Amino acid sequence: MPATSSFAALPRAAKVLLVGVAIDALGTGLALPLLVVYLHDVRGLPLDIVGVLAATPPFVALCLLGPLGVWIDRFGPRRVNIVALAFMVGGTLLLAEAATVPAVALALAAMGVGHAAFWPANQALVAEVVPSAQRPRYFGISFALLNAGIGLGGLVAAFVADVGRPSTFEWLYRGDALTFLVPLALLLGPLRHIGNRPRARTVTTGSYRDVAADGVFRRYLVVVFLSAFVGYGVIEAGWAGYARTVAESSTRVIGLAFTANTFVIVLAQLVVLRLIEGRRRTSVLAVMAAIWAVAWAMLGAAGIVPGATSSMLLLIGSLAVFGLGETLLSPVQAAVTNDLATDRLRGRYNALGSWSFQVAAVAAPAVAGVMLDAGLAGAFIGVLLGGCALLAVTALRLARWLPPVANGLPTAPVATADQPAGAARSG
Image 1 (cartoon, rainbow, N blue to C red):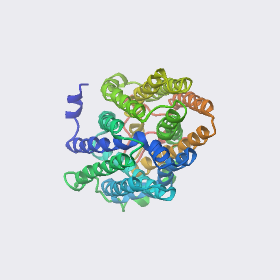
Image 2: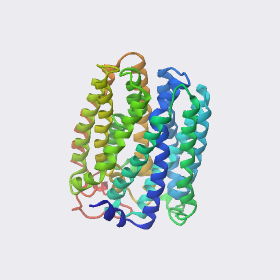
Image 3: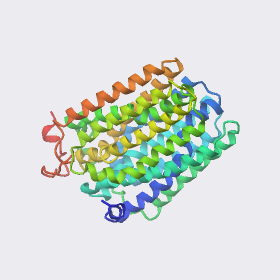
Image 4: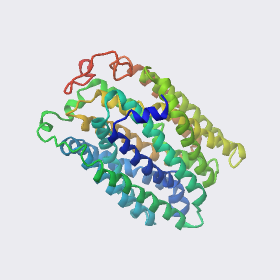
């Protein structure tokens, strides 16, 4: 599956969406690796407080995802995405100026509103314009572009950010805010005709109770939670906090590690797409968990020799290995959700999937911040390794119930619009 043919086969609207992904990701790379450093070293906030603050966006998202699923189904995903991007612009600009705990909390809360609305709306929008068979390809290419942008932005941040000059961090966050304007312009311009279908007539025929009745999806939400807790939920506050305070790394090493992470993803994603095609997605998730366990073991080893060259190499290597695992997750997670979803409840399915992710994203930074502040670095690594083992077992057990189509084996009958693929086996 060469990159060019993979991209060329996608619908035009999907290609335009990918342009927005790439530009937005560049801004994310400017700010993502350095939130803990910015709040702890530049703004002088204690590490345990930083951990709680880092959990603010997912906590806000958690509170909003219920009504957001209804709004996506009622008003269409494009309109919800526009509101989400506006909140992300405002929150990021405010964070650039925030110097106190209340100001930082307000900024991160606004960003939380944006993230809460963006991801389920974006996935529902993709599902409207990309056929089911092409969705893993879209999500894989999107993830590669996302990480190419983050990698480039992270490389810039690694050489621009200076803890002795707070203005360097402020300008990085302002740059991040500006990049949100590109996908916003695309939704208001060339993409204004998609994702607008109001569903007021059908929203009364379904509810979250119907989604919760899908037993297969309930089991899958556990997998989503675990993958978020031992994965993305600990990257900002957990990995960066450990790297800075336990392994005693510089901001440059942190930036280079994130660049290595995205470099691996960009190089490997399309190859991985070929390798996993036709394989059970549950098995792919189990392999991902094993790879992440190696990454966290490398992170733990970096703390044994703090400040040494070997520690620096282990830190960079840990995020590079973590990135290899990410290439397995990206084509799978959203694709399973949307293969189980019905058209009339797609917003709610995606919202509940995001809810499960956000529960972990609230818990993981807070747990990381508290454990690292208490000097429990070794126990923190142990929690991550145990979580990876539990994720692998849970994913493999899910294969008993997940329908073949949702599990990446297109041999089962195609589900109808109002009958989820897992409904017949939802006990």
